[in-house]
Length: 88
Image (cartoon, rainbow, N blue to C red; front, side, top):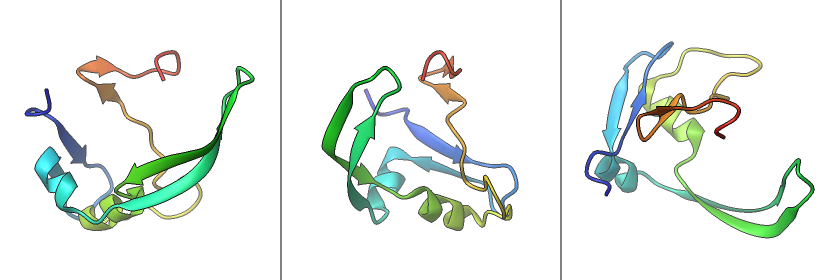
């Protein structure tokens, strides 16, 4: 079920945005092939990732924050459930 899926970009931005799934699909996506290493000791090599870059989304909203850590945020809620270190 994806009808209610949306992404809100707010905070230190010039123009807060709320993008529906159709809006996200209309943006230019990128593809990356990278290795994924878990702290638990396992790895997946050559994993293919595809989607809209965070930098594209932040530029769309006119993100103002600069410096170390800018744009390095994690989701706060997923499917209505708060995201914590234990649920990621």
